[in-house]
Amino acid sequence: MKELISIKRDRRARAIKVLEGPLDNFRVAITTSMDIGRVRFALDGIVVDARLREQNTSPETLQALADQRTPVLAGVFERHDGTHTLEWLLPQGAQQPIAPEPTQVRVEKAWRSLPRALRLAAAGGLIGAGAFFLALQIKSVWNLPFLIVGALATATLIFSLLQISFSFSTLWESFSRRRTLRLMASVMMKYCGAQAHGH
Image (cartoon, rainbow, N blue to C red; front, top):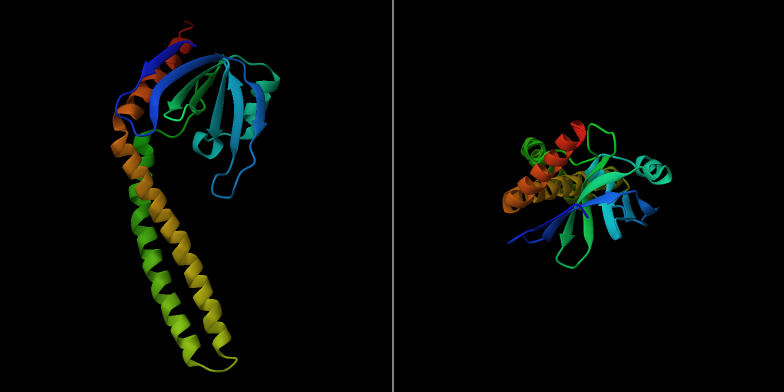
């Protein structure tokens, strides 16, 4: 372990660790549809979980690093339950780390997506309610199109509500954990800079 930084007053993590070495025992985790692309590996004697959708990478990229025994540096959060989650990973010789988008970019995207998601949710709810109401009023085979429209509108509503929930979750995360996220970003930049200068 190259570095250990204790974190105070964070709801998810109690420490930042910078680990080094090759990826060992790499495997893709069995996932659910809401938690796509999870992998697990050992690094520096510590088991680390990573969600690839958040890291902007693929299992194949990390599998290649593991197969080639490429030395890496990695910034991980040690959670309060003792597990470790990957935040960024810097292969030896690489100029750019494998890392999530910067917090500011994620916040801007969340704010931009909210108005559209709210409009879609409102439209889906109104159209769905209207279609189901008409389907109940028409006691014949002609109510089928209204049922189909209602089902499609309900699906749109559910999708929009998930988008809204994700946007608010991103905004709350960036606000409530801003000090921790800034600290992790500064640690990443320090090691990226050191590697770029050959230290």
